[in-house]
Length: 478
Image (cartoon, rainbow, N blue to C red; front, top):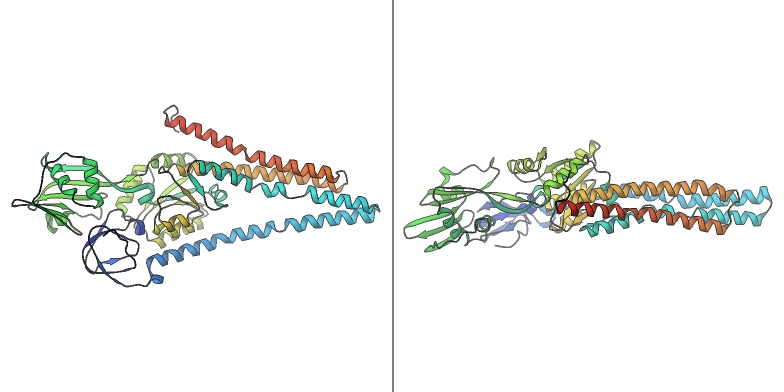
């Protein structure tokens, strides 16, 4: 108990509960016993297990996920190589233009000294400083602003791609929710029953037991003669001749009274006495702070949102309803998440994937751009283009706002740099600019581009003031 499953395998002996949220997105712990299949990466919560490995490491679920992630990353890098080849044409073109100017002034003007000065002026005035600074200086300023907001940019091209997104796909467990159960409903036949349940729950490390104690906060003097935890079932205690059980319905009340959990959006825990139900507790996952605000802000700027999760469909639908998300797809394996991102890309959509688990890593790599919380798995953080360190999900619309403003400034910088060359090059070729004037003009163009990029600071400062005002209740969010 407390260790992660090292390899894919089958349970030989023992019973326990597994937390598979980081691997499959399943928010509720799953009971396993003899002959149950287990996947590498799942956390063993309660009992000890003896496993028989059925796959070697290179054929495991984790290996398949890494393969999917690497394939997606390789396909996306192809566009960067095309951009690099296009940029490499600029320098030969400039040198060719200077050579043509030199020869034209030398042969047709007859003054080779003047021809040399013209050629040097053309080389200096067309120095690609402004054009070279147009993109990176904005990216550096934007990355600094985002870092101040607790968002780290891992890939230089991520901001450019983030500005292009038109749909945001969220994972559920660990992203829209915190992966920490909370008590949402209690049905009791007697006022003292919750105290009995909490007195039992304190003896377990199971997430639902801990949530029950945390959310009820009872003051109970109820004691038991003996308490033991049944892996995969729950807690059993004896007080005199009475037998109390706290756990899943099948364990607490018998298989005949078990409730179906397939369509139930909540995790259910029953307290029973001698087989009769005393209380019923319903648990839901805790929404990540700022999740509702983030979804509303994304909708306000015209971005569609959807959920793609490995959790049960009923649980995913409940979360979607709470947040106002209209499209929600559950029970998706890692490959199905990748296929969903590829389907959207095939329709011409630019997908921002936000996820945290190992099962999200291939989709994070396959999406047009991706984000992950700092609490994500190592593989999830590695696959993501941006990582946010605070718990609030409104880091997503904040990053998009800065990225879109950055894209606007980059386009303005390109216009300034290209416009400068369009005006300055003919002047240099005509012999109207000395090398000194060409150097001054080239430096001035670079200063203008940098000054334009620094306007992003004012935009980010305005956003911070607005956010602080909203937090203080001075301004109501749209």
